[in-house]
Length: 199
Image 1 (cartoon, rainbow, N blue to C red):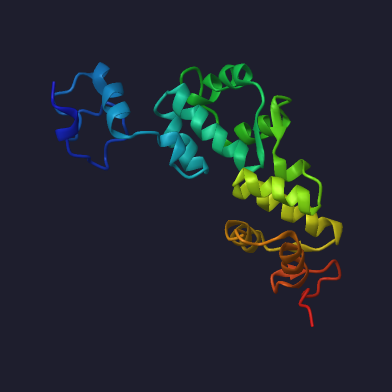
Image 2: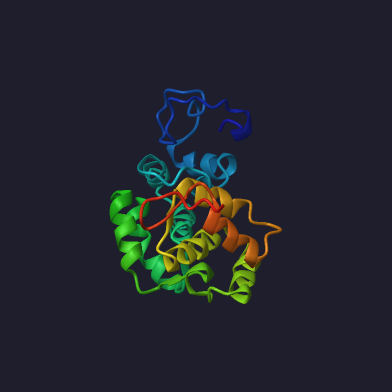
């Protein structure tokens, strides 16, 4: 068997035993999983959370890699897994070990699953103490959800990308600073459709 770390990567190889690239040359088909585990690390933790990313993980037929990918999808919605057994029961139907579907079906199932629980940003009180509890989570999704809820109270909305950027850079802000930003930032729009700029 070829030494796995000495085998050059060829973009034509999609982690199937293709036999056509330097990675597969001289490697038995059953050894492909060893290559994947030693060289990719965790693909489920690194591919984009898109259809292409989903398919890239599904082709591995690895429940563990798909669990990592699914956890990222769940975190994007400011939620978390409340029942590991339920996650383990669902994953094979998406991971390729039993079936492959698509990311939209996966998202739909996750959003309706009773074992997916709301994150701190969705449940913390809209107070200084609630903001402090969200900050302790150190999770951008939690901060985005908390800020979105604060905007909802004022019936304002914000560009999602700008809100995510603010959430990534919230360190050092206290609750009053956050309220001021969410009232006065140029990317906040009032319910009347006007810029929320402060005088």
